[in-house]
Length: 311
RNA sequence: AGGGGUAUAGCUCAAUUGGUAGAGUAGUGGACUCCAAAUCCAUUGGUUCAGCGUUCGAGUCGUUGUGCCCCUG
Image (tube, rainbow, N blue to C red; front, side, top):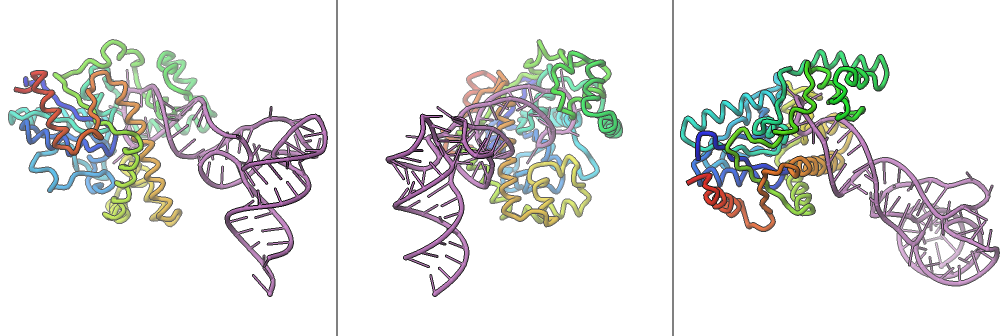
């Protein structure tokens, strides 16, 4: 390994990434950086499937429980925090292992072609644009964007307001900056993906959701709202929270909430699969072919040795 | 047991006076440059319960059977 080495373990939810990362960390003297847009929030434990202290086997985890209801976390904050974590791990002569399923966060950190630009999000401005669209009629914002950055507008669907508004915030056109270096790593990177047969993945997701309810997901969401997390915030828009809020309000029954969460998690997993599928650097491991995290991490370890990534 | 109703895509339902079937949803594929567990796009599925009949032509009409639902006893 050298001082630019970074190992990443990615893939859709419910494939067992966390356990594999821990097993690997034990083998190679590593520490783990969570790449998860929801696990950064304190108090959101069950719904985000955070690992429990007992499961960590003493391996230090970074970027879990780092902000509260006052913060709307984002990819840029993640990059800053992850860079610090990487430095911190290296200063201990350990190997950083990035592990998670938030594709945008991961790519923004590890690939040169995913520069986020220099303009921070501005919620007031975004609200202003939303009002503008409302007042001026559907398609107005897209027209503005087409006038400002035609090339970028061409890459965004006219209905995708979230991206249209973000693009309007920018001061320069980033539409084609990633063409050449999109998949060029900033690190000496070894990136592994975990995948599962679709029906087994879905069964795993459904089992996990059922278990979340048994563990007290409903109570956790109620407590989070109590502690100041606002409905509609990034944190409360996460899976496991946005589905429970209407249940707490008595708008839907529990069976409906459970089914909604299962369905939305399946959809999410599908999007993650689509996202990671196109990354040409990922070496995929089929979880179904293994008996557990230990065996998977052993194969990853062998691969790292074979590639002289570690000694 | 008798009377009535119903049977169409995996699910919930459409289909004018008979002109060989459409939505939503699920499923599937995709996009993604700081809201990303977010946001958005596209799209595959049907011997219309089964048999016989009327008709140039039946999801639609007649009849028999079967399943389910309701009412009466």
